[in-house]
Image (cartoon, rainbow, N blue to C red; front, side):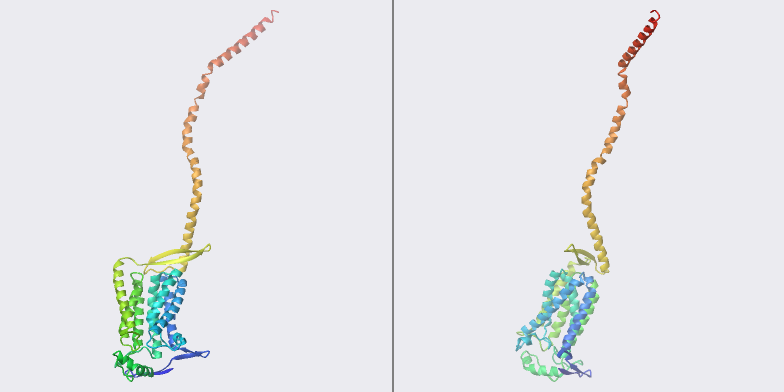
Amino acid sequence: MINHVTFPGLGIELTLNRVAFTLFGMPIYWYGILIATGLTLALIFAFHYSRSFGIDADRMVDVILIGTVCAVIGGRVFYVATAPFEYESLREMIDIRLGGLAIYGAVIGAFLSGIVTCRWRKVPILPMFDLAGIGFLLGQGIGRWGNFVNQEAFGTNTTMPWGMYSEGTHDYLARTQEVLAAQGIMVDPGMPVHPTFLYESVWCLLGFFLLWAYMKHRKFDGELILMYAMWYGAERFVVEGMRTDSLMIGKFRISQVIAAVSVLIAFCLWVYLRRKYRGVPQKVHYTAIVKENGTAKAYEFEWLLGEKPMNDQQIKEEIERRRAAEQQETAEPETKPETAETEPEQSTAPETAESEPEENEQKPQPDETAGDAPASEETAKAEETAETEKNEETETEPEK
């Protein structure tokens, strides 16, 4: 469990215990702690920048948790399936505390599960992969130091000043010297070896900072994951050629083949998509899912890349504004029939205007009464005759 590590060219000597501490009698290894540390830092980074990629942090949790489990399973299955030796029991196959995770198996497992989970949780796939690619570089850059503590995943002999030697390197090379010689790799167990874990750690951390700086200038969704595939694939192709524990298919190193293919495909896609989206402003699309009346309703938002993302309060206020606008729109059709009924009343104004001439035409009614003049003259004559008769009667009374 303890390794005495030296760097003869640098005059550095270290004593490393693979066990960090024990918990309830169970040893807790540095390998697991360092992988967990890398994963935790990648998670913190993802949560901080999730909104900048149009990803809801709460729904992203499910994608990450399921992806992490599938990454461990995929990495272990890939390693066990391609290991140059046979395991004695199923327990040894699933015991990852002693190492034995193939990074490409982990990446494949994470991405396959990520596609399914993103569709289930309604998380945008390409932006999620972009964010995951940056997180992978951070996690790998830290997790590789677990190989240093375990004294594994090192390279062939070297005379460089940073060459590393330990009991672990000596015992492994002595045990596999004949197998490596059959592959054309000559090694000396007593000589320092390439610390390939260090090469990969530095390369991944450098790539993390570069992609972090470029993140705000990406031209299309999925660009960062393509850049991750090119960056990591190029490094892995070179470093894998130095290692002494490569998983093989015939005479080919599996990781080198996968690295070369991934770099080629990613580069071709990157060039094609860069041309396709040249001059097109990159927008960030965000979907807020809110439960309304027992059903989930999606509200879409977007902003230009580089602008400050909307915070929770702004999104809440915008949703309330849209709800109010929808309620107003649904209320307007109900009032339209009432206005339609009142339209005839409004149309009576011209009719009243037209009726005014009719009233004016009725004004000459006195002329019609003039037509009754003969009848009134007869009445007057009858009254005159009645008066003359009275006068005659009064005149005849004295004669009696």
